[in-house]
Length: 404
Ligand code: PLA
Image (cartoon, rainbow, N blue to C red; front, side, top):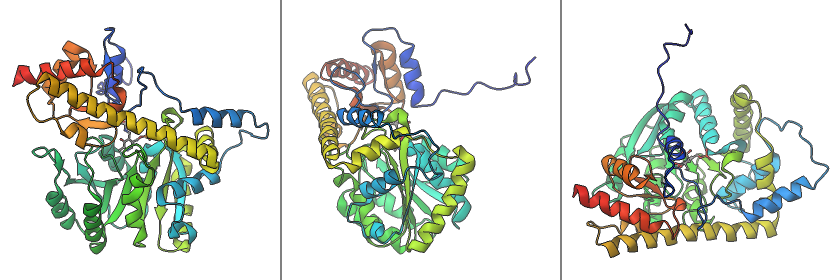
């Protein structure tokens, strides 16, 4: 009799569990559109050329050692990461008002930021959009914050519920933390316009709400690193405080290297350095210090203007391929006469299309067509190719017409 025999079996993760089920399927036509992981036209994972080059450079450098990094991570990496998200000419950086720490990809950055806030910030409530990435509520709850939602997506218009968003943030208590997706909102693919961001910013600053940006897709939405960081930069430009969690999983294809950064923009250099000292106390008992390899790749690329330019070209190619998948899927559905308006497929932005398919239709597509996606009807456009679009369109057509 085990002392653990009472333990109940936990369910698979709603996103990563899709891959587990996919891996168990032996059908040759199977298609994984669950997790947001980029695939080539051939359906293969992609290691960017620029990443291969950077790795080669690192391997060929005999002066490199495997000593521990500082608790806050690789200094060059942190500097370059802050510049990437805030802009090279950011006054906040020039005035040393930004505390940046290397973390375990986007997830780790959110968690460290959450723990810091739970320990040092007076308002313990964080507002997250409804819906949002499924890990957000878990990360912030475990960090010790109390999670509430604000209206974000309107299923009727398949667009932003802007009035609902303004109302809910308007009713939030002074000082509440607000989680914002910097771009390419996951799972909806619906982003505020620049004009709407400006209204959100004004409202939040007037109420003293604290912005916490999750930037997991910089460069992936529009293909431009600057355009995709604009929301964050608007909040930093007004001189107020701001949190930003960055991930290099998608935009550099470094998924498994777990490389990301948390930046906390403060009002003075003195506060920023105290904040950094406290971040160390959060990180040290959690994982002591972060891994070296992924951060070295990123720093190598961001520091070298040739490699940086090559990266932007490869990033744009990935973004463009996703945009072309959107067009192809829309055309395929229209040519089949699939009932309903599917133009949201090309209006939404980023890695995902929030199809509007319900859980039953998703289950039907998995059972009959071996197509795997999350039960909320989200499909990863990055996992699709010209060859697999017809198969997906057939499945969607069948799913919609059988329940119509
Ligand atoms: N924030 C958002 C909004 C995300 O979509 C993801 C990843 C992350 C943070 C964290 O990514 P990282 O820790 O790997 O940097 N979302 C994925 C994967 C792509 C996942 O669920 O872990 C997704 O399929 O939604």
